[in-house]
Image 1 (spheres, rainbow, N blue to C red):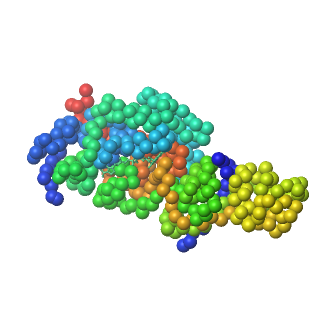
Image 2: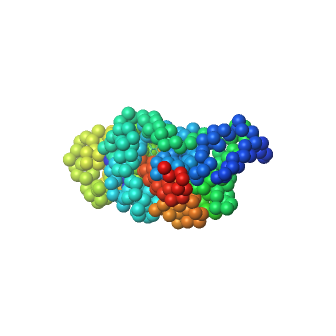
Image 3: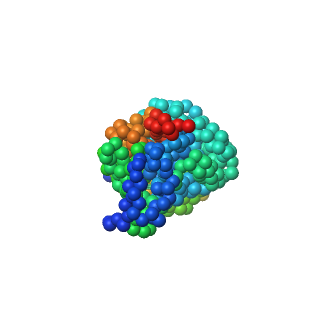
Length: 454
Ligand SMILES: Cc1cc2nc3c(=O)[nH]c(=O)nc-3n(C[C@H](O)[C@H](O)[C@H](O)COP(=O)(O)OP(=O)(O)OC[C@H]3O[C@@H](n4cnc5c(N)ncnc54)[C@H](O)[C@@H]3O)c2cc1C
């Protein structure tokens, strides 16, 4: 049930090893102590060509890996993924995967949807590979997409599996090597190469790899942040974004229903709340998610206008009970009107004629500045991202290359970029992955030995 008006203004006031195995890969040697343990990686890569290791088989990592391998087919591209590839794509958008947003063709408008990144993303980022490019890519690779009225883009199949199947089939077609169930635990540099330690959690297993390019697309994982710091980067403290509010008001939570602001049995949710949580993520974290949320339910009506609407209604419907009659221009549903009357201690059975002008003023004030006590962060998990990560000042958004470490690239949620709901978080992953893949592929093409170019 849509309880309120479609538009609100909300404000928040804050209350305050041992290793059993070691493999060394370089251009010329692959030393294997116990072959059986890592045959997949060692045997899948050509020792003559350069090696790109991608940390993380999520949206950014896989999209970037495919792009790099497409541009530089001779480059060895290995994606190391600690769990299952594309696991977040699988559960995203309630299993439908909100791939991107189709209502933002302009990169300036697009950037405004990123509480972290809105300034920096106004540059070349989305111009290089924006929502339209992403939609074309998926379309060209066999995934039919549809744009819903609010701009969210989904596969026509309404299943995230279409997106996963498409990406994994491109992984296979281009020859990207997937290494799943393995974690990149440490990273350092020596002789212009990245020395990576890769471990398998389930068994006592460690291997060491030398890579020419490293692309960290590890999402919000602590291990990914640790790799970035080992290579000289700083990390903006990660905090949750896109969450709901637990509200201390039993009467409100009894009103559960659906709308742009959704009342649930524990508090408030819906697109407007998620947007507020994203823009206020850092302040809310600092206040331990406690404070007063103030909602303007009628932002298009000035308080004085609101009072006169209510007074007019009183004069016109003097003989009707307050609960049964209220100004339609307020756009409220009856249950919420009752809630307001209860909050003001007004008996709904009294006639409009009997209500004092003071009570009318109080109702008007409540509609314009309705305070709710927020007692914590909710557990809504339809979409959830992390604010924080590698600062954008430390990478070039034109190439996604680190400004501190040549041949090191980042994309996706590992960076201090996060968007509001609506497909913006995946778009960050596709755009960053594409740019990083293009940069790595181009560098690798320049470095390909002549004898390998057929
Ligand atoms: C429930 C849910 C629903 C969502 N729905 C949407 C949606 O519909 N639309 C949208 O735009 N956004 C959505 N998001 C946000 C979106 O999923 C993320 O923004 C996006 O997945 C980020 O992509 P990524 O590749 O940067 O990171 P991830 O998808 O998190 O991928 C990173 C990968 O790296 C792996 N990894 C990390 N560290 C290591 C390591 N050291 N070694 C090996 N592997 C490692 C992880 O296992 C993970 O698979 C949703 C998020 C959640 C939680």
